[in-house]
Image (cartoon, rainbow, N blue to C red):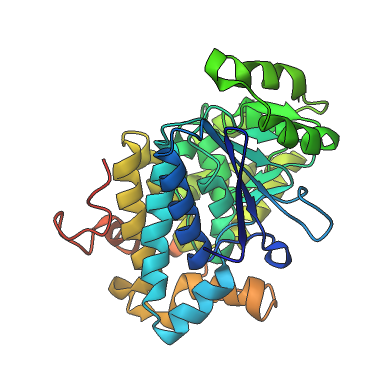
Length: 365
């Protein structure tokens, strides 16, 4: 079991605490394996009726859920040719599939930062909890990656073209926005989280109304509006190509359009094209097929052989270097301009490097 996970059973509820506060509970391979082991055991244990999960901070048990995968590990492993990088993504995506198909209520307390891999371990349930401190996002284009962990699946099912907007920009949602776009279900006050967590251990699941009563007691209406510009998003992010989207934003004079255009111009041009294709393909996919597609894509991100780039030359390693290693915020994207990305650069991301029978996620159904 990982030192970064605390697992205990109170009453009939299994309680998991992500305990890596110095890294904002970013997931490493040890944590992925530990979570998988815990959830499989509790899924088969009749004494456990439900599972809840939260994240710690340096100040206490709530305040930050999970900032994503451990991108520093991604960088180091890619440079070293460490095969654990391949294991991480295979096992993380299998964990995401397990959570989406979990046989018991699974209750993520998505307080504070919920990004990337944190979304992967919190989507796929009817009990997604947010608070007034929630900051939810899939910001992978900022590091030359794409919204993985099933991101194609759950973002493509957001209303209108909001999935494209979230995937391309990495925009952050508050509690109201997350609920409006179908990425959360209930809001709790941050001040009530300790009491709500403790109360789970006293629920009577035999009567079948335990969680209903618990939600009625602790859930509230978000106090702020969503801040989601639905009409503008649908008008712009329904455009046919990434170039069309950015050019439409740049032709508009309002502050939202100009700010959004500037954000996109700082993202990886190559990955903006790839991500738009990902989200639109995923709309017609089930979760298992989407995760297999994303497993193909992430291999190509670190080993972009069709562009003769891998290791330090890959878009993703360069993006992580600029954001989290050297922190110069000056990634050298290739191509540097959105308009210079060609279909031949994008299409191979969606060609699997494995046969159907050798795919590392072939067992997912």
